Length: 185
Image (cartoon, rainbow, N blue to C red; front, side):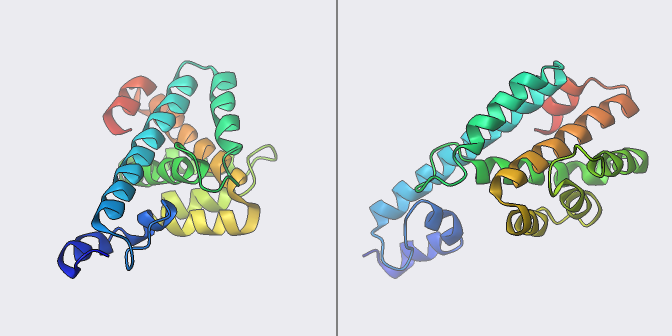
């Protein structure tokens, strides 16, 4: 068991460590450190997956983007979750859209919202879009979509929302989608 001083450094990361199978209250410092390393690997892999999906959309290759998401979808119920996993990638998509929301013109937000309400939009996309772009609350939006539609739907809704944000923002601003992705993702 780790002493209280080093343990305190890990307390704020308890939610991340739980996903890695580490209990902050009982783990050794070595286990805490290993859990943090896995959490960092998970985050880095999620960022790479988000960029790969957005890059595929920027190239107009929605098939490649879909294939990447399908592979992640298969991780939705895996325990322990592999690296990368559907939840971390979906959350990163939503966080990315939230982080650029203050920079978006109102017309882009409105168009993304309209696309989220189309019949072929992923389940939960409309609610997630509102939470992320209007309320700037990706965490609450993700919890709601996962609770109502499941993790796989949340993954597709978050990817579709973020892809629509970057695609429509690119058209509105005249900047390439690649440039916007490189600046923000």
